[in-house]
Image (cartoon, rainbow, N blue to C red; front, side, top):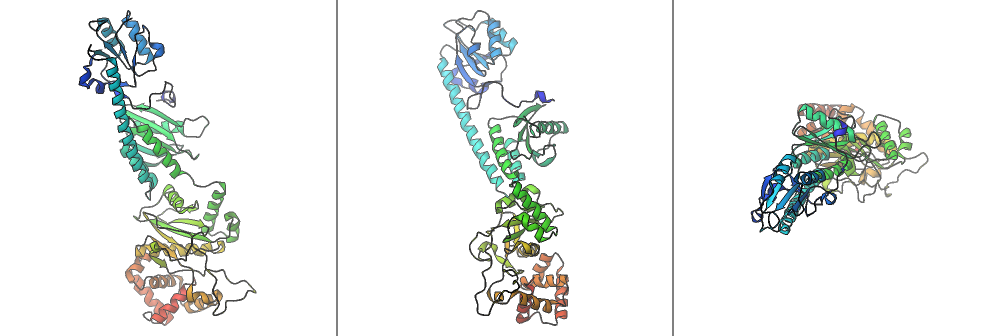
Length: 535
C-alpha cells in the first residue's frame, strides 16, 4: 500500500444527503415486477433518472438507476460504454411500446461491461420505480439517523466516565464493530479498543495514521484505504498535538463516517492540553514546587499568591491513571495544573487556583467527613503586628475552592493556602486522601482552623505543639494523627497508612509510653489533637 492509493478527499460529485439503496432492496419490491437479466447483482443506487437520449452521458452525475425505453437506441455497445464511463449504477429498460423485449445486443453489452440491467414490465410506470427508490432512501435515512443518535448518546455517556478516552474508544469500536486506536503522530499506540488486527492490517492502519498526522503542511484531515477485506480510516484530532484516531472495520455501513466524526470531536476535546502558554508555565511551576523548589521561585510563575488548593486523587477501582485521564479530571475540576507523571501507582496531584465558592470548609455534604490535618488558615503574624486578643473576632479563613466528588475517583483536598505554604498543603492533601480511602468517602476536604482553636495565636499554638509532641518521631506522630482522626479505629488507620493493624497498635502504644499519657482519656486526646493540627 502506498500513499497514492489512499483516498484523502472526494473527487466525484457528492451524493444526495441520504444513504444509497442496494439494488437488491429495489428488486425485492414485488409490486414493481423488476427482473435483473444481465450484469452484477450487487450495486448501490444514489439517484433515479429517466432519459431517452442517444447519449445521456453529459447529464449523469454517477450512481444513477437510468430508466429508458430505448427510443434512440442504435448501438448497444457504445450506449452501455458511455453509461459505464459516466458512473451509472444500473440500467432499467422498459419493454413496449418501442421494444417488445429487451434487445439481446443490450443484454450482451451489459454483461461484458459489468452494468446491471433490469427488465421493466409494461405495467410498471417509471415514476413508480422512482417513488419506490425515494421511499427506500427515506427509510434508510431514518435508520441511519436512529443509529447515529444512539451512537452519539453512547459516546457522550462514555465521555462522562472517569476514564473518558478509553471509554469513548471502547464504545466507538462497539458501535462500528471493529478496532479503534488513538495514536501519536509517530504511530505509537496510546489507547486501543476492539478486536485485535492481524500484523499486516495493523501496519496498514499505522501507516495511514501517519498520512493525516499534522506534522507537515498540507496533511489531509482524514484518509481511508482498504487492506484485504479490512477497511481502514484515520482522522486527525484537533489541538495541534498530532494525535490521530485510526479505525479498522470489516465493512463500511451508512453512518459510519458520521459516528466517527462525533468521536473525533469528543476525543479532540478530551485529549486537548486544556492550557495555553501561560498555563504551561504554571504547570512547570507546579512540578517544580512539588519537587521541592523554593516557593519564592515558584510564586512569579504562578502569577498569584493564592489562595491555592492542592488535591490528591486516585481511581476508585485502584487502576493507575494515565495523563489523558488525569487531564480529564483536571478539566472537570477547572484546572490545567495536573501532575500525573510520577507513575508507580502514585496519586494524581492537582493545583486549583482561586477561591470563588461560598461557605465554610466542611459545609459540602458530599464530602462526608473532614480530614483531621490542617494548617492555620491565616499566615504567621508579621513582626510588629498586634497578636489576637482573647474575645476578639478571629480572621475569617480563606473560602474554599468549589470541589465536588468526581465519579470513579477518590479525592483528598487541602485547605486554601498561600503559595508560600504549598509544600505543607501537598502533605495535607495526601493525608486527606488517605482519610477518604480509609472511610470510603468520595471526597475529604481539609478544614482550616476555626472555632476555639482559631483564638490561639498561631505562633503560640505551634510552640505548644512542638513542646508536647517533642518525644514522638515523625512516623509516630503521623500514626497518632491518623488514628485520632479515625476515632481510634485500628482497621481504618491500618488501611489509611497501608500497614498491618498490629503495627498500628504497637505505634499507638509506643506513643502513650513516650508521652506518658492515657490515650483513652478524652481530654488527653483533645489536647493531642489540637497540637497535631498545627502541622
